[in-house]
Image 1: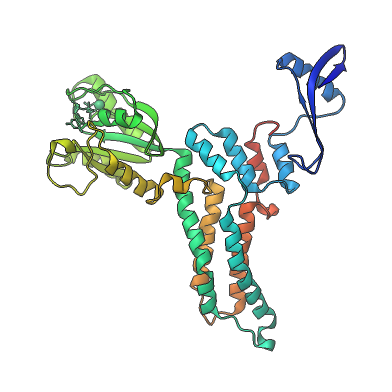
Image 2: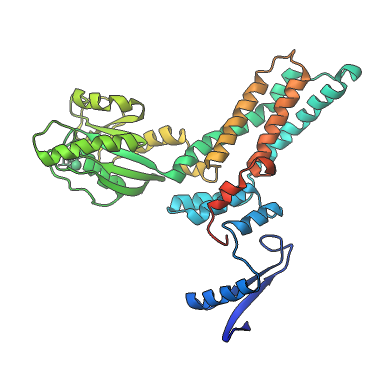
Amino acid sequence: MRTLAWEGFRERCLVIHFPGPHSYTGEDLVEFQLHGNPLLVRRFLDHLAGLGIRMAEPGEFSRRALLNGKQSLLEAEALRDLVAAATDTQLRQAQARSGGAPAWIAEARAILAPWMARAEASVDYGEDEGIGLDVEAMRAGLAPAADLFHVEQGRAAGAKWLRDGIRIALVGRPNAGKSTLFNALAGQDRAIVTDLPGTTRDVLEVRAQWAGLPLYLFDTAGLRHTEDPVERLGVARVREVLEQVDLILHLVPLPDPGPDPAILERLEPFQAKVLTVRNQADLGGGPSGDPCISAATGSLEPLAEALGRRFLGGLAPDACLGALDTARQRGILDDLVVQMELLDGLDPSAPPEVAASLLQGAWGLLARLTGEDRAETSLDQLFSGFCLGK
Ligand SMILES: Nc1nc2c(ncn2[C@@H]2O[C@H](COP(=O)(O)OP(=O)(O)OP(=O)(O)O)[C@@H](O)[C@H]2O)c(=O)[nH]1
Ligand SMILES: [Mg+2]
């Protein structure tokens, strides 16, 4: 504890000295913990400004930590996401990513390095010394690295949904059970359920955590031709929702003969994101190739499986936890997969320069991923997403 005195003010506060190089940024740091009065803090900051000390830019401390080698770009990104996390899943995902560079990056480097050395030796001395590059052996040797990138690409694609959430519209004819399913997934009675067709007239929205997945659910008015002016407005709104969601869950009661052709026609432009699910399985009904659930009894496992297949590539949500998930990271993973495909497709008679250049390309992508390749990483863009002082 210290007593600070300036311009007629006195403040007894905690002053913590973090000497470099073991501080967060690697530099000498001092932290002042003042009483939580904004006016007091303001007056103290004014005093510091008078001494020529300026405010930090957004993300400046993290940027300094990165430039001083105290943390990798991946850790800086995880920290940014940790601060911005708004759901439990986002929080867990950011925490799982904050432990430094994942082990698979080191594994991949260990696989790539000897082949890079061989390819380069072959370029430099091949003809004089008879050191040729055995392309077949290289392809076999690199296969485990290609597998690593492929697995991480799949995990990253799933992690994207854990991070962003999945927007799902529930559509179908009146009384299909949309609101019953909406309530079951949300774990609360948000929507009114009755056995009268046309109960839901407006679009209802709820955020839910279900089967390990963060969901944004939209309950909609049953799609039918109606003369009721309020219900007509509700039906018209459904289209706007259909455009913005990631998945249209078309609910069709199982005992019915099948989907309504008028509804199928409406869903036609969105075909790629329609998932047909049969409801009221508890009432029996014929066999169906679609997932069959009962919203009323809560028998929803086939829906969880269908969502897992579609959004997580069949992986369990926990298997995606800690995977790289930002657009930047996923873009680099995609490039790595392509690079390995090019290496795998290499003609055995290709000159060693081609293999060497492809291997260097893969190596460079890994460096760009961790931020070691500083020239190519857009640090400004990353750190502008931080709040002041982080
Ligand atoms: N037996 C059975 N009944 C169900 C099931 N799901 C919903 N129901 C019943 O079907 C009726 C209609 O359910 P809602 O959830 O209101 O249907 P909706 O699709 O939202 O209907 P609208 O809002 O009118 O378009 C209610 O009486 C529900 O209890 C189910 O899985 N099994
Ligand atoms: Mg309803």
